[in-house]
Amino acid sequence: MSPTVTHQSRWTLALADDHPVVRAGLRSLLSNEPAVEVIAEFHDLPTTLQGVRELQPAILLLDLTMSGVSALPTIPDLLTARSGLIIIVLTMHEDPGFAREALRLGARGYLLKEAAADELAIAIRRVLRGETYLHPTIGARLATLDFGPAELTDREIQVLGLIAAGYTNAEIAQRLYVSLRTVEGHRAQIRSKLNLESRAQLSEWASEHGITPPPHR
Image (cartoon, rainbow, N blue to C red; front, side, top):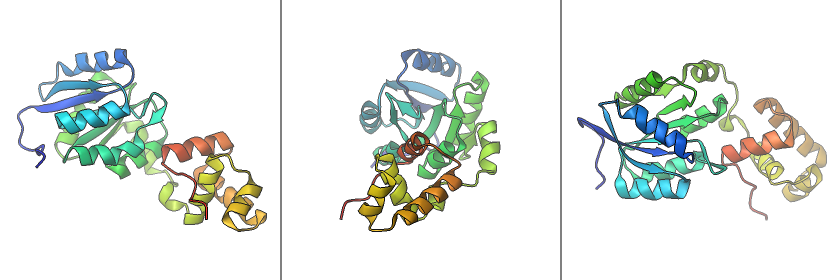
């Protein structure tokens, strides 16, 4: 049985970031925080998942993107690898949609890298008390956010997955056995709900939220 993360005098913490300078800076900051002890550093997602499974840290400071790969889809696997793991996302991404998705997947905090040193300590202390921590700017924007994966219909998610995979509207219509006009309508709805316009923006959003093309029938 995996150890729990309750009633500890000092909490073990691991850093996951693909920039050595960032990890060194975080380690230095956290050396002054008596509540935690940094026990490991990871530079990519495979190493992070393996390290969490083997070392069982209580807390993971997780960069949202490492080596160009989104960490969002890996959050459930990390939580499975260490029962009770507390994940705090530390990122440059200010899009509140990313914060919403990270929290939905099980992260307990979302902090911008530009945050002051004392904010990192505050975030850690709050999540250790069982609270959720959001960078104040992100929290304010998230409160008024009016879109998210759950608000796309199943068909819109299928269309978005195919858009992200590079299919044209005509190809999507053929793939889904619907009219071109129907695909164009879905695409307009997706753009409106996500407040995104270009194919590149839609593709990036789909990738960050783990949306892939439906299987071919």
